[in-house]
Image (cartoon, rainbow, N blue to C red; front, side, top):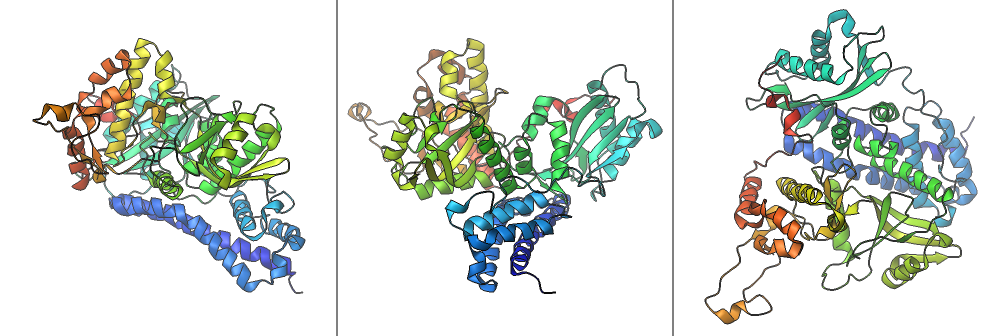
Amino acid sequence: MARRPQARVARVLLDGFEKHFAKIYGAGRDAKGLFENQRWEELRALQVARLDWYDQRVRECVERLRAEVPAELLSEAHWGEVKLAYIALLLDHRQPELAEVFFNTVTTRVLSRRYFQNQFMFVRPSISTEYLDLDEPSYRCYYPAHHGLRTTLAALVRDFGLSPKFEDLERDVRFAVRALRKALPRPLHAEPNFQLQVLESLLFRGREAFIVGRAVNGLTIQPWVVPIVFGPQGQLKLDALIVDPALLATLFSSTRAYFLADIDVPSTWVRFLKQMLPSKPAWELYAMVGFGKASKALFYRDLLHHLRHSTDLLTLAPGTAGLVMVVFTLPSFPFVFKVIRDRPRPPKDTDRKTVEERYLQVKRADRAGRMADTLEYADVAFPRARLSPALLDELRREVPGQLVEDGDTVVLEHLYLERRLEPLDLYLRKATAEQVDLAVDDFARCLTELAITNLFAGDLLFKNFGVTRLGRVVFYDYDEIDLVTRMRFRALPTSPFEEDELRGEAWYSVGPHDVFPEEWPPFLSPDPRVLSALKRHGHLFTPGFWNGLKEQLLSGHPGRVAPYPEAVRFSAARSPP
């Protein structure tokens, strides 16, 4: 019996997705070997290259459809049947939620925008992922009551099969046992179900591998993560056992680069991580384990759901208006929407293409826990009734080239979304003296940690930084970001002529990449409390500090920005118990 033509289209679509997933899966497996051999540049290149693979596979799939399928089958008249045929192919699939996202993306390339509805796309999931780990669980279980906690932890580490030797695994395990015992309720009584559960594969990011697990004892569930790093002699060591909820949240924060991992059934990993980090939405966890397009789709579903179940208006975001972006928000939804102005306001000298390139640069960067991740969307429709008059006027005035008004709907052709943070300048205005000191100290750490990863913020005004719910200072305005190694950090010249110093503009030549750190403090804030706090970080305002970092980067020996504090590292303790 001949296959129906719609089934043939569905098969081409699923082939395209499976080709994409096979490449992602292969990258996760390759990461282990690159880590073991300390091939850091290749590991980083793999992380960056992975971000482009999805769009490449989508283009290939669309080209194949147009080459192999009659044009009439790629129309709205047949697409509903194509979707039904595709659902049939997903009934026993191990990544149905990702395959649905791939289908949606191809649909947007094939059909007109007016057909972006559930009849033709997966606005809601069609296949449950609830029990996909029944055959092959995503995690392994170990039972310390049988062999003791130390022996069990050591076996757990060895089972990952890392080829380099450990400096002293027994020593590290003693540290880990002490940290885990401190985290569990005292006195520790082993219940019949006492077990350690660990994800079946390591997660890799930067120069670290991470064991992700949880201790289950009765009704107590204690999440934990163990980073594995190389010591100075090229041998492995367990660096810490992280149990603090705030540290776990920042470890998996979207302000950091995504992990590489050998993941066959992503939904089971996300479910495991969600139980560890209940405050993290599923879309963010999908992004953290390397499935950015699924993350965007889940986030968009959350946005649509929220719009249907709320009544407040989208309004211009509070704070100082940006010169490059129109920024607006929905007060009841903790994100901001950013649209590049058709013509940035003076004195900004940039264009849309340059801004988009810099946002892409941030997407591919390490981010060091100091840069807000962005979700990028095209053709986002809002009900006209949900836009405040002031916002609609601003969009008509500033982004007419990206605005389509279609009856009761307003469509923005391109925008970014970021988690809403309190702008640092607004935070400092109402902060106590102690809060000012803490925020300025973290601002200094933010600049330093970004620089260690070869990122220079460019525009250092406090309005371009935000404060997270955990009190961390994060950078979120990327239109002037650049590489530290491209900048020229200079001392302010001194003229022998007094009239030069009295001029209203620089009497000396200034190149496009010239930076004068001595100018920053009064430029950042006139508040004496802030200026006093900045004095504690005087090294930041000297060209010597920045040029020293630049030399390190150029020599190929950058510093390390650990995603957890020095105090929790095993090396911070005097000796193992």
